[in-house]
Length: 316
Image (cartoon, rainbow, N blue to C red):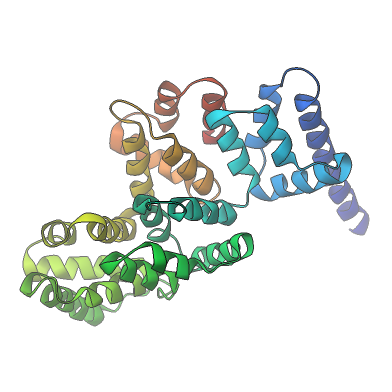
């Protein structure tokens, strides 16, 4: 048993060595072997890429990120560097980028913070603090205002109920509270919404939305559309859609990043990279079902060059 285990471990080591040499060779001298870079980055797990980074630094005394930065450019470079981060570090960087400088990209804050599990939120907060020496919560408080700030801060507490038990009575009570807070006297009581949307597990929320529909004859999304606006509306709708169908939410985001003229490459990179080891296969299936075309095909026709090759490789 012992010897078998050692053998396995050294094989892992030699696979990492091979990847490190391959990347070094791909970037050394004149010209860059993009195909080799794509092959290594797209076929390894996030954990394996961490090992490759460490080994590369130990062997060549340089950070792999710096080497790729000087050799690659544009969206291909962005995607390659995103893959070298742990997913939670990458999410933390995206949040920081959305807030730094003038103006705030609320859509990014909403897409990340309204869709993550407690565990992911805690890991992102930890990574943010480690990378930027500041608390994510205090930056979000400084950079957002009003009711959007309240819901995002509620989500950052990472206190959503775990597990998937459903309390029918609670669903009925929550539905009634949401109705009272909303249509009855909207604008006075977003607290009820934050309490329910940020704290209940997804299955419980689905029961609440059904109870709401029975009570009011309206679905939850309709009510939010009618009663709120702007970024608060986007945040609430994101939580509702994720509770109903998380993979469907990401499939829609991907579709909207590519449909019509122009492509929102940042969103494309962010979702494909961060969901790669979470639920990308499910997102692909959902995309096919909703839009009658494959995500790979749409990405292929909407992007080009090495960026296209890397994304398509990640989707397989």
